[in-house]
Length: 435
Ligand code: NAP
Ligand code: HSE
Image (cartoon, rainbow, N blue to C red; front, side, top):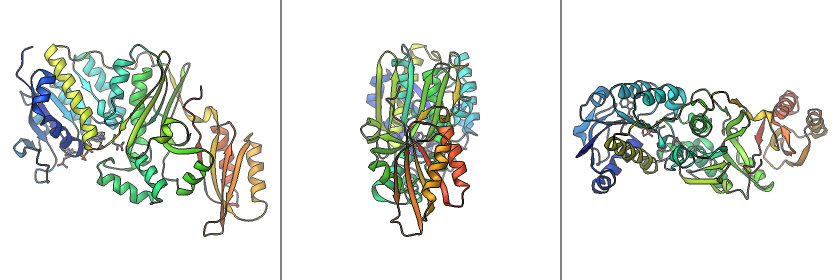
């Protein structure tokens, strides 16, 4: 197709949308890479009066999404508004209007990805979503293209920038979790509701997308177990280090025959492992693939420009497809993986870290050890910290390999005892190199 320009419409012009406009302003480079220019015709926002970056041409702003979806010169709709509704309707309508769609919205894909991707597939349309996982890291493209010939066996990701930033700051400066979350919001890393970041749901949505690409599971139905970073405090980082580990917000999917163990949450990682050094807003995806072996993807997982790089790369890619008359080349679908069962972390054996807050008096430790023993939980190390300014003692325990489900049963019993002053924290110890 011989074209002089491809029309782009934006739905949303916040952190990511502004970055997209900044990159699209590099017109000469983009024209050289695409083969024609990319021209923004309309930008839908909620509030026409809100302050905008200088790169935003105010004459293109509209509060009517349909101005974008029905614009005859717009070929590619970029959805960077976030949330599930009305974003689902917007993306579905854009596809119905025959537009190619680029989205950064993992929550939307995790909730409705199967339907949207299969609609795009049936109608030979592109629905691209590189920015939905790990911000600026090109892991989606790697899974869809570079690894299309291989069999991925496990994914170990640090794929939420906000929670990694928060844990890093709490560890390094001892700041409170609430304070650091506010900072992450100011920096444009956090979701509109940052509980999606700290409670693990954002990483879970991203893991669903990665599992769909790696294992062919349903993007909406293969849901991982999710745990929050909120119960962690500085003492956990201190003792994790003394035991030879770092605490990281992990997203793990490990295939074993017809099952995938999938979970998201804070975990102890051996300090010598490459993931232990991934700090701040940086993300990493450590994949183990049958033929190629281990692969590491590392970079900024959130923030305006890093995320915009992935969005605009998708806009460029779909524009090239438009020019070649080759849009809608095979969307990921839940075919090969439809029968795979997703299970939680409770079914496999690994060491665990426990922090118990108990009354500091004789006999308590013995009762805890007895309760753990009754559930076949053997202790590898135990430290009591009673230097905190209160009458309680904190007991940190590292177990040998034990089933997560047995740990949870033992802890439920221990937490019912009068000796215990606060819910026990349980964190898995995850070694990505374990077969
Ligand atoms: P944001 O800063 O809150 O921007 C949202 C934009 O959408 C705003 O411009 C807002 O308009 C507009 N909007 C919201 N509801 C709308 C509606 N009903 N009609 C028209 N416009 C509407 O969000 P963001 O951080 O850019 O995130 C956008 C998406 O990218 C989300 O899906 C997010 O998960 C994803 N993402 C973000 C990052 C990141 O680092 N921020 C990284 C990767 C992916 P107003 O400006 O008028 O309020
Ligand atoms: N809130 C998300 C994060 C944005 O912190 O990782 C990137 O997807």
